Length: 246
Image (cartoon, rainbow, N blue to C red):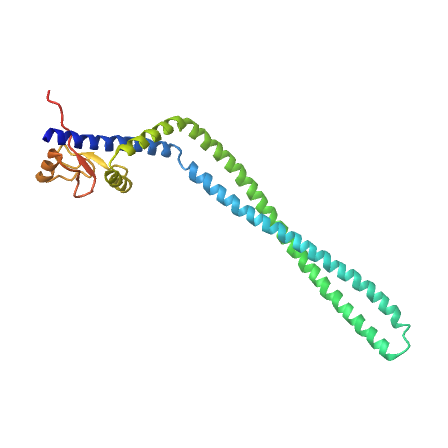
């Protein structure tokens, strides 16, 4: 009965060790890509943000140019009206008409002054907007070239590891399906929090992960193989290898 219990526990541990080996290889593959996935993602986000700024600046450019065009049209039409009113002023026959024309002339002269000031401000804003737009377009172009280069590097790296990664992921999927769910969840928690080492041997009387010396009771528990045993210090899953006699 004890041998059967031991075999059952050894089978569970064997699956966890195999799973850990697969995860270690998958982690190595991810590390081989370096910062490329992060860099590519960051560049995409930066370009998206810059292009949004470009779109806004282009809209501002259109709005400013339209406003400048309207201001110049107002100035032109006001000057035409001024010439007309000045001619009429010399032809009026009564004070009422004269005063009305004077008010129109004053209004138009004031409007011309306001619109000329407005055109200067708009011209300055257009120049500033265009300068900023030029810089943003240049940066976007440079970032896009950099992104293309990094994407090529990443694609080459992915191509190198694609078959191996695909095979490992398929093995992992099949192995997880055969592993006790509670035990798998325990493994995942430890693997993620303990430097990607969740299952360690304890044959020398200490934890193979943190090297804490194990109490004799813990060692006895491991040898009995009646349940999953964890290190009291680091929580890693321990196993005891039964070596064949020479």
